[in-house]
Length: 101
Length: 438
Image 1 (tube, rainbow over the protein chains, first blue to last red):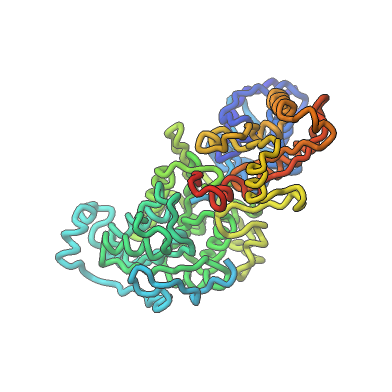
Image 2: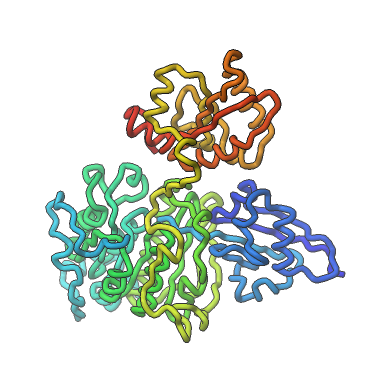
């Protein structure tokens, strides 16, 4: 059994608008048989935090195109993307890319 | 953006030479010394060991293509011209509008309605007449981009839409030019240098374009002028560092700025992706594509026009004016966000933001139904009671009509819901010129 994890989620670049405009969420992921990874975190967010129109945030089992995921201030691709195993007190940021100028 | 090649020519309103007389200027000469006046002018940066005479000479031999002369392009070009860059290519197909002036700080009230590329060039010549400013009054397209990018040393993406960002990226990769890219919206900004010294290109990071419905422009989302000002200035800094030989801090990193928190985040990015479609080892993109098709959106930041309703579910502003003049009993529902209602409103409107309707907010729906029931005359119980929906431009109003058509409340009775085509901005344009436009 993986112990419960306390992590900080942040949303920016407009992605926060799908979460009532709230940018920072301190959340506790419950204990579960498998270790928590980004894949299961996304499923948890979809189930527990997303209010409306989940397709604007997740597509399939990953984030929609145009959202950059940062794990502890680094591009998630350097960390193993969906397979990264979350640690207690991790910081995960979802940034929607901006195009305006 | 299709078809707007160098042949597109606007009347000469400002007395500047037409840009197409010399669209691709020859390479800048490499100089070996600075003049007395140059030494005086640039003395404060010449004494910096990081630039020095060598850096200043490199800068004077450097040409920078500025894609977009708006909120990012203006401060960027201003600092590059002041610092003594050799040449600035200024690309913009748009004209200066009143709603640009809060952030596009090279443009002047006296230049409203004139080309942004030429307006910027004129302002920059006043700052530093030694800098060659070449305006290109065109929307960068697949037919023009590569030729232009090849003619410059560094490219600054100061554009305002998704297709142009992919186009500029691909052109830079194909031409082997560093791309200094920034973007800004609301109170946030992002900056990165793409395709430089083993770092990723824009496509390495974003292989697939975002769904069009997730993209917000400055007109819809708003932007505080100083935010692109900060990002454009940072962008100028990175161009100067590359041009003078200092290198950049962002070839494999992104800077994310949150103005509300006053916070900069420096994010380490992935390296170049060997499987990238354009900069990978076996690229599938070897020539420029149709980027509007690739992104499913047009290459402007103008607001999209939705078409969700049939014509008998919509009225024009003229028809709605007639309804008012004929004193027809009805309810007008304004579905804009509260912050926009505060800017301007029609006196007879009731307010129900689209977001509340979309989440089926009980309080909002109940008070709306109550207002409709109050307005409905007892004699017309059997006839469908007219409800009109309005927003800023006539897009959200269509979504709201779809929602309200499905409304079923006890005691509501039959209603006929239509939207007002073109919204309040059409009302301002065609019916009441005193009504504010924003």
